[in-house]
Length: 85
Image 1 (cartoon, rainbow, N blue to C red):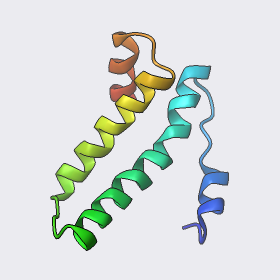
Image 2 (image 1 turned 135 degrees about the vertical axis):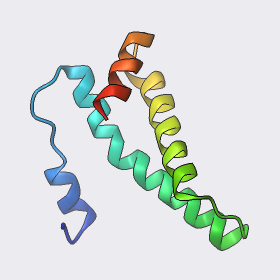
Image 3 (image 1 turned 180 degrees about the vertical axis):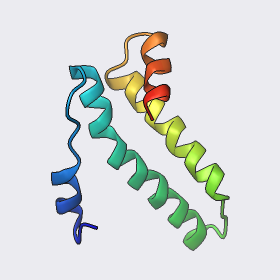
């Protein structure tokens, strides 16, 4: 397990796949951290907590939204992204 975030990111490499798939892959760590950070803040500052399934769902929804905004051009690519996770 990497000791630091920079170590994790340096080994977060996707071999193969097209340019769009590589863009998706690069978004995943940020999306996970965003989801965990948002959940943490909800628990610490708003006295709200979600189940692990809700956190996972929020992470997936955020990832799809970010991909839609940045690099996915059509619905078929979204279906392909979900299938590859």
